[in-house]
Image (cartoon, rainbow, N blue to C red; front, side, top):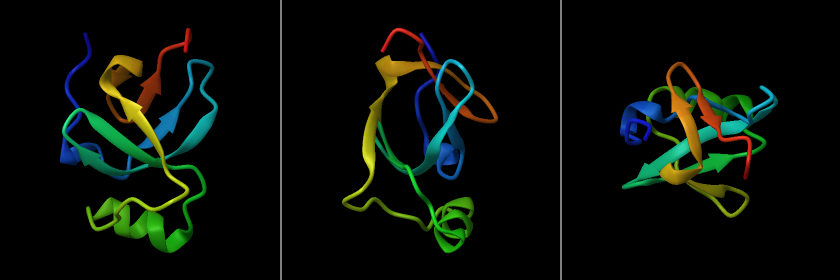
Length: 79
């Protein structure tokens, strides 16, 4: 079991098991992260200070999809 998602994870890069970048965490809502797959420079800056929110292009990542969370959010390989 990985550590729970927190607001501190907003702005972190999300990668798959092979290390391919999938986007950034735009918002954390409980056990769910909203991931922006194509963040603009402005969205990246806003996310780094915790001001980015979710929008219609974001996808949802739940804690059970995570391999680990450290300097980036890494998804499990068997998704």
